[in-house]
Image (cartoon, rainbow, N blue to C red; front, side, top):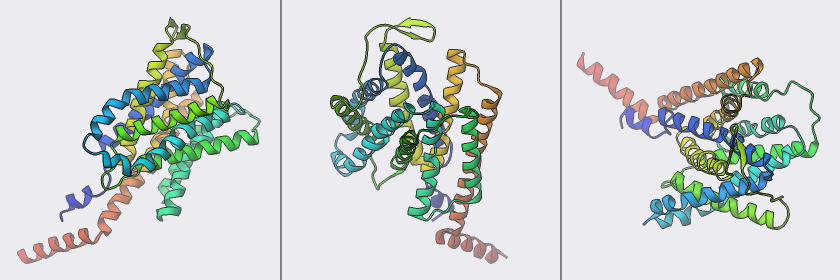
Length: 338
């Protein structure tokens, strides 16, 4: 086996994965802009989420069925993982987060949720023996510090214990989202199918909770304020569903499979940066100097984790028996020439 063949056996850490991860973070970052116009018009957060997920599932139905044509066994084999993805990563994570922001500031809830990236590192260490190296630890500390600055947590905020519990559960849901997205079998479900199945399960779970009265369901069909204009409620709903869900989830699954759960979860923190950027460009909410510094910290943390991944890949390749045999063959060949 050649060195190129050995390298190909590992998930790609290059351009496509990074592009998909940034695309996923950017599109997830638009959700606040779209959702705020609905919520300000009288929609409950749960109603906005259910409409978002249901419409996304409908949009993905035809592409998913086309990809499954003739390969229905894939759906049977991946049904358990897809159900867990929809139950925890789609429905659970959002439900936990909404419960958290009812009891604490949004910034604190987001910080707790994005501790999911640290949980991913911990799970990979405990379950798969992938002990975090110094660069990953440094990157995690740097990125979390930057996240705190971007979310402007300098002020004193009273922490509700129940709110903290919901925020930590949201972190668990986020970690499971990245771990399930990154998991691959011999013949894994295509990202479109995985996202579609998860949306179907998530929409069904949230609708059932709404029907039971656990979630508040309020929606109106009146025009809403969106980017300084009065528009139909359909406009933000389409943006929330097509951009902030369909593209975001499909790209996120594709990125996690190429980059692995750890690196994808840290790049996912860029969602907060994009949310601040969109609020600045579209809503005129200028970020503070501290938020700019925090953004630099997040990017630095992601870069450290990325460098650690690249270093780990080179080390693993060098330590593989195939690589050592191939290197020995090159040495023998060079010796024979002389």
